[in-house]
Length: 334
Ligand SMILES: NC(=O)c1ccc[n+]([C@@H]2O[C@H](COP(=O)([O-])OP(=O)(O)OC[C@H]3O[C@@H](n4cnc5c(N)ncnc54)[C@H](OP(=O)(O)O)[C@@H]3O)[C@@H](O)[C@H]2O)c1
Image (cartoon, rainbow, N blue to C red; front, side, top):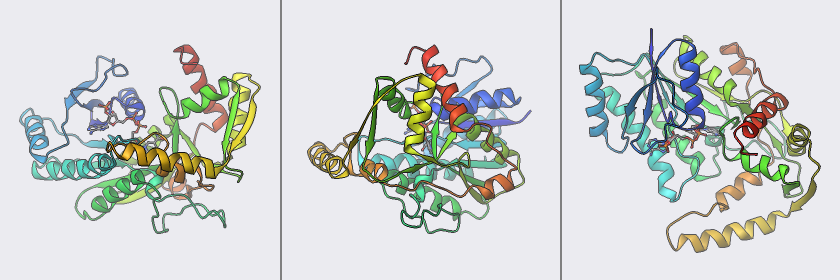
């Protein structure tokens, strides 16, 4: 039975990685922090490892202790990461520096796995060209438009410089599903009868349902590939109105539709950032968020993923949203 270590196991995607690993018969090691919630990690078969990524020395100590107990991880999914941060430097520290610390510690302790999957993001490459509507391709020059994406790209640049280390990279587009808390705000808004849009230009979104993303990651681990990266989406594209339409249908709601002009969003983001900056923090609506919200082309190339891993998404948005909303309702979130 193979051992798989999943970092960021307490989070949305991490908890699904844990669940699926157990289902597939792996010995699953959940990499968490002292402060991490175990609410979604209740299965008795889960082994826990506290990982402090902030220094190489503490990571080495933990990994040495594993080694002493004859514990080796055949597979590692480095999924821990920050998608939102209180301070700008947190993005680099958590998404890039912690990844460097972790890999250096694995190498220093001779604990390099057979396969290491880094969970990056489409944000590392940024959106596609708004004029041509072309998807972002593997061969494109990365052009992240916010600090989050830049920090993922910095981590990727370190990882891809490693010739002996068995890395793979997945770059999911927007991930949604049960337990998720960002798209949840949109679902809640629709449920309250409001249908907001930002800017008047047509926006094309892409998605991947969390269970499909987890499937991709296990396919990548089991594959013979190393030193490869893939964008991950369900292969379809969704105008933002369709996302709202699917949600309204699933919730059986009628809504009032309104559009907030881009200049207003930008003004609020700029002023908010300026004020919050005085305390060294980042407001929820900031210029990075504005850049993301105002980008109109989030298409990405998935043919290499479909071909290499023989992957076809099981969930389109309609099926995934229905399952997600059913979960939110069951849990009383909606
Ligand atoms: N959700 C998306 O749409 C999406 C899209 C593309 C890529 N991704 C990537 O997928 C990964 C998981 O994201 P998610 O959506 O599941 O986010 P999430 O629910 O916020 O989970 C993040 C996980 O990372 C851990 N983590 C955060 N900072 C850490 C630190 N300093 N040290 C150790 N662990 C830390 C968290 O631990 P605690 O519970 O202790 O905070 C949590 O387990 C991230 O790398 C993210 O960049 C997400």
